[in-house]
Amino acid sequence: MAATIGIDLGTTNSCVATVEGDRPTVIPNTLGERTTPSVISFTSDGERLVGTPALRRAAINPDQTFFSVKRHMGTDWRARADERSFTPQELSAMILRQLKKDAEAYLGQPVDKAVITVPAYFNDTQRQATKDAGRIAGLEVLRIINEPTSAALAYGLDNGTPQKVMVYDLGGGTFDVSIIEIGDGVIEVLATSGDNHLGGDDFDERLFDHLADTFERENHVDLRRDASAAQRVREAARQAKCELSSAQSTVVNLPFLMQSGGMPLHMNVTVMRSEFERMTHDLVERTSAPVVRALDDAGIATSELGCVLLVGGSTRIPAVVEHVRSLTGHEPSNSINPDECVALGAAIQANTLETASEGLVPYTDILLLDVTPLSLAIETVGGVATRVIDRNTTLPTHYSQVFTTAAAFQTSVEINVLQGERPMAKDNKSLGKFKLGGIKRAMAGVPQIEVTFDIDANGILTVSAKDLKTGNEQSITITDSGRMSDDEIDAAIRDAERYAEEDAVRAKNAGAVDAAHRQLATVESALARVGKRIDRDEKKRVKAACANVARGLRKKPGKMTDADIQALIAATEELERTGAHVVELASQDSNG
Image 1: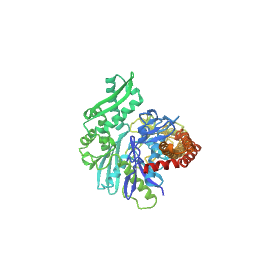
Image 2 (image 1 turned 60 degrees about the horizontal axis):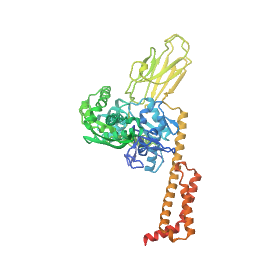
Image 3 (image 1 turned 90 degrees about the horizontal axis):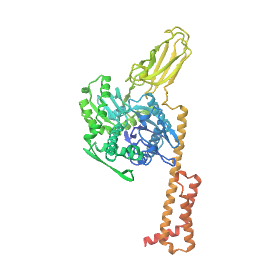
Image 4 (image 1 turned 180 degrees about the horizontal axis):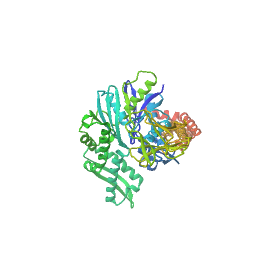
């Protein structure tokens, strides 16, 4: 039986969890880490690295290493690597596939279903792109849920007493704030707000700029022009930010950072926490408006909050904690791990959905009621965005509204679906357009066209339009330039599966190569010790067998064909037989 998992697909780090023994549990990756860096790197021999191995290659291979892909979800951005371009969905799928693989290794069984979290302020296109990434990774996405809601679910498991909770979620690339009510077995999202382009990456960038500017003043060289040097400084800035969360100062020391005029240049800069707080003050202040908006939309005062939960690694920054304290008048809770709680909540929801679908007693009695983060509208006469569904409407939802034609004898209308809060269509995001034809010719204002919006529990939208006179109807699940077509998704799935097979072959190849190296080293070491005690013919045979294995190892594992590997395995076995006597003599010497 396949297992079900919860995944926090993060901008900086990702986390996967499952339910074991009625408790949500974080699944460590193969390196023993509880979170996996959301980094992908492509090597020169075609290997795709994910996580810490990819992060380690960033300085030496910056052009083929990709960070913060989540910020590009739902856009037409592309990454160029391995002689082709990749969509954000495809790169995200590589991260998801690695998490899936880690979960299968930990659980000892296949994993084919998951709940994946997204920022509460993700729009419809970004949510659909995340679902597509899961599909490419070989996962059936049971549900897309909001990160703050997932964190509240993890919190509410042990804190089921009725209360209103603010979840302040400042992650690597996004900021969300949600007002959530917990009570009587229900977790209901009252309101949500946020900023999709505010997070730890922005704090890192400010510190990077400070270090780069300081280096330029001291050395009259702009390190930004050296990709490898810039990447080393970015990594050092990220580390310094973390250190400043617990120390008043830190030293960024990078020897031999780059060369200028044939001379090596070093970086040695002391950064004070007070300096860091000054350079990032405006970023912290930017979280105020979404907090106020969410409270206003929920219709509650800060005094009515029972708890303020901090979620996301960036909430470890002392200035952020102090800002939340002054903004809400509450001491922020640290009862849940900000890096892991989102994945834990997703695991709870995944388990609930899976057990309920099997007709079993649900793992938890908690009912989750989420909301749509942004208003939905259609464009009407004069370029006006006529709202159909208000932001913070509880999901799932179904709403219809009747419109009419703007000109006489129109036989078709174009439906432009919008998402956003602005009054004019051009100022909002167009999610997609479609045409309804076959309208009976009539004067303007006579035809009755019913437009229906359906948003499912994933927050994904389907829009339909129907001419009430003729019964003609058209509907679409929203797509736009940021979406992948079904054909593109299917091609990406085949590509991912092909690379999974290649990874398996590469692992098998690596095992054969490792065994050959070990056998060659053992025999050569033994021959060096006892070579003078064996006859010339035996020595010649052993050396020939060693040379045969050495020839087989000249190719990189990733470039070896099946025939190469089989030849290497045969040569290794032959060396083991031919060199057995030499190894035995050397062993006797060691034991004697």
